[in-house]
Length: 461
Image (cartoon, rainbow, N blue to C red; front, side, top):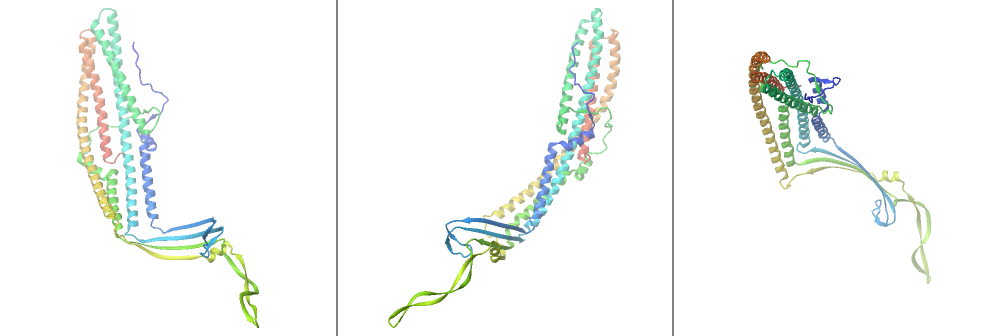
C-alpha cells in the first residue's frame, strides 16, 4: 500500500492562539519596527525644531607656534622670530525675527510627528489584520487537509472491501481498478492540501518573524458564523472615524500647509542680535619697566673755545619683562554686540519657486487623502458584496452537504451489497467530499471578509 507523506506535527510543540500570534507580530515584525523608527525620527526632528528657537552660543580656542616673518598679534608690528600665540572667544547669536520661519517649523514638525504616530497605529492595524487573515488561512487549509485525509481513509476502507471481492473473483475488475485510481487521486489531494497548509504556515511565520514552524490552536472555536449586521455605507462611516490612515493623511496636509508658510518667510527680512567676547595671547608681548637713568652721548657736539665737546643727556633705562598668559588674556579682553539685518533683494527666484513647490506638495497631500477615501470606500463595497455572496453560498452548501450525505449513505450500502455499480458510488462520494471542502472554504472566506470589514471599522486592535 502506498504511504502518505503527511505533514508531521510535534505533539510537544507549542500551539499558538490568534492573540499570541498578534502579540508576537507586534513585537517582532520588521516592517513595524521600521515604522517605529520613522516615528522616532519625527519625534527627534520636532525636538530639534523647538531647540532651533534658542540662542546659539559657541566658544572657540586655539594655540599655535609661528616661525618667520609675521605680525605680532600684541603690537601689530612685523617681527621675524618664533612666537607662540593663542586666541579665545565666545559668540552669541539670537534670531529675533525671520518671518516666523522657526515657529512654523515647530508647528510643521509637531504635525509630522503626530502623523508619524498615526502611521504607527495604522501599521499596527494592518499587521493585526494580516496576521488574522494568515491565521485564518492556516485554519482553512488545516480544515481542508482534514477533509482530504478523511476522504482518503474512506477510499482506503472501500479499497480493502473491493480487494477482498477481487481476490475472491466475486467483484468487478473494472470497479477494483477504478477504486485504485480513486485512491491515487485522493492521495494527490492530500499532498496538495499538505503543501497549501505548509505554505500558509510559512506566510504566518514571516509576519511573526519566527524561524520555527508554526502550529496554531484549532481546538478552541474562534468564531460564530452569523450574518453581518452592517451595510457597506455604515462600515465606511465608521472607517472615517476610526482608521488611523485617514488621520495621518489629514495631518500630512496640515504639515504641508505649514511648509508653504515656511517657504514664504524667505521673502521677509531676517533680524538677529549678535555678541562676542574675545581675547588673545602672544609670547612676543613684553612689559618694559624703568630700572634707573644714565648719562649718555647724544651724538651731537658743541664747540667751546675751539674745542668740540659732546652733548650729554640723561636717559631712562628699561628692562623687558614677559607678560604672563593669564595677564594677557585679561588685558586683551574685548567685547562686541550688535544687530544684523539680512534683507532678501534677489535670489534667483528661489523663494518664489520654493513657495510654488510647497503649494504643489499641499495639493499632492490632498489628492493622496482623496485617493485613500476612494480606495477604501471601493474596497469596503467589494468586500461587503463578496461577504454577502459567500455567506449565501455557505448556506446553500450546508443544504447540499446534508443532501449528499444521505445520497452517499444510500449508495454506499447499495454498492457494498452489490446492488449498485462503482460509478454511482464514487460519484456520490466525490459529490459529498467536494461539497464539504467547498463549505469549509466558504466558511473561512466569509470569516476572512468579516475580519477585513472589522479592520476598516477600526476593530483590528
